[in-house]
Image (cartoon, rainbow, N blue to C red):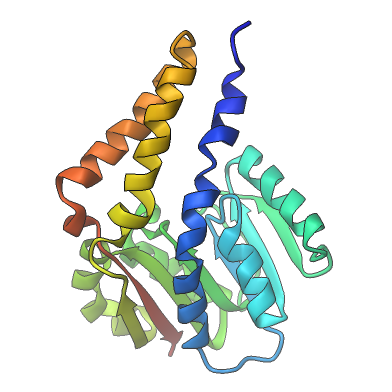
Length: 226
């Protein structure tokens, strides 16, 4: 019997590799001033590793939004397992269509999603969602963000702090070990055409990073609404 493709995603288990980056989420949060039970919006939360971590770090309320229902289902299960149902909620919502009331959040957290709408447009549109002097924390590719930083005062922010991740960390801690697993799964799913197409998609991404690991360096940027 052909193995189900949905089982493949569980066997790839991207969370296993992504967990290695939670230490950087934690470092970025600890660079913020102490906020009393902040309300946090995690934009493009996916399966919610940072979402859960933010709830634990802040003792506040976190809303994770994403357009992928299956990822939100995984996050909902984690929320229940962690006993965080009273403080962590999810919503299926596009980053392009966020309709929260003005000044809803103390912190907006965005890891790897700002390129979807573009840096300038994201900052301008998210500005209204932040409370006065609220914080925007962005984690993204340095080459996506660094050239835009000089413009942030025009969009109502000041840069509070930032730090770069180790230059080749995405290769050594994520893509290189992921490639080993992908090659194992190619053998296990060799008779499943649909699964092989999924694996090929991951391998293409791995190959892109392998060609120039330093070009995929990333950093956290902490900005404050001014």
